[in-house]
Image 1 (tube, rainbow, N blue to C red):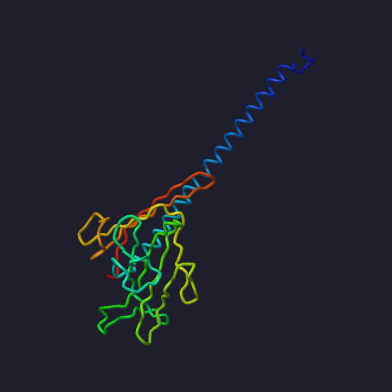
Image 2 (tube, one colour):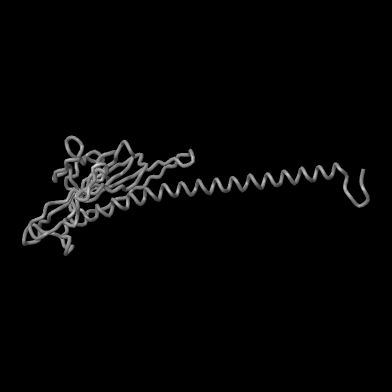
Length: 228
């Protein structure tokens, strides 16, 4: 039955149904767009964190004088047997970085000819329990008249004013790998000692679960030692 100049009941029901379907479709599209946008953001976030972590390590590599196979400065908080810096997966990276005086900020030389320098040791290591990448500093003992600008650091649970906590570089690390390059080599050795290393290939893989969904970001760089 149609009223004068109006619509039938059936026509009205059809119009309402179509309008409802249209609104639901627009709602689904908007929801999917928001979810997709959030996923892209989360992927970018994880990759950016991995990139920043690698950049922090790369800056220290460029400052280093050499890469060490073991720490030479005593560390009472080192793993049993001390730190071992063989290339590969999950192994620490041990760098000898020139020591600087706290007042002048100058490099402290051992000899008057400025050929040998005192070095601190920077250790990047992965805690397999917390899945965090940490940076530990072992400060060299300098001769009288100098104060080392660096401070030896300790695990957070043992930190004091004189031995601050190791730096937390990045969380949720799923994998850490190092490779060493010597003069003339084009491929990083991933199972050798760091003797005569001129550059380091360093890779961090971060896996983070956000809202129940895992996201993975991997970033690699090759950094050359500039103070050899």
